[in-house]
Amino acid sequence: MPAKEFTVLILGDIIGRSGVRAVVSGLSSLSRKYNADFVLANGENAADGFGITPEIATQLFGCGVHVITTGNHIWQQREIYDYLDQQETILRPANYPGGNPGHGHCVVEVRGVRVAVLNLQGRRRLYPIDCPFRKAREILRKLESQADVVLVDVHAEATDEKEALAFYLDGSVNVVVGTHTHIQTADDRILPGGTGYMTDLGACGPADSVIGFDPVISVERARSQLPLRNEVSDNKSVMHGAVVTIQRDGWKTDGFRRFREESLV
Image (cartoon, rainbow, N blue to C red):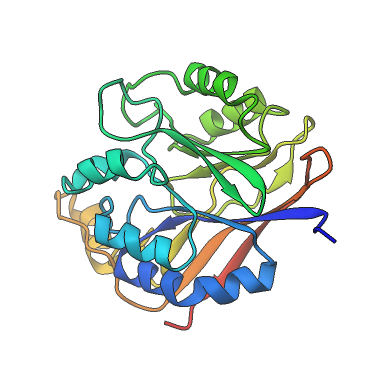
């Protein structure tokens, strides 16, 4: 008898070697714990805090991640550019101008369920790229008959921008989750129209850090105001994210909650 629910595990920004190790070593047991059918992860900071490489993406796909989303750091590792064109399940934000490498959304079939993932980037305190609200509507119109489940990662700085976009899409998608700040918020909930939402998933990365980076350098940057280069801490990680349950009958989101898991590595 087929399961009545489809469960999605969503991981926050994976940061550096510590974060990659935690996901590669721990995702299998995490997926079993939450009975996950589908895994979405943000790989924005996997390459020493700045972007992702094809090698790291391959590791993440190999350990059970189905789709990787990204954000503003995606362009910092030039070797990823061709890979973005070749591999449809690693996304860059859809609202970058046309002609850039890669894709902003994809549809993947897992266990008989067509899962669409849409990656957007906010504009407040980031870059003045195309409007994420209009781009979301444009893509959702195309996806209308192509997907059973729709997941949206909004990589953005401003809380109000993420929350406004979630209400704008409420009832049109199953989930809107925020990424980018690396700090998990406590506002996980289901909106009035049925869309699961939280402002930021948090990060999969070093626990003793300042948003994933070496606290000594971070303190000196703040104290001296010098443009010192951040370095990712390399210590025991913690994994943050959300678990979503979706009813197969009608594809309604009926469960949405955040999680925090200590890593063993």
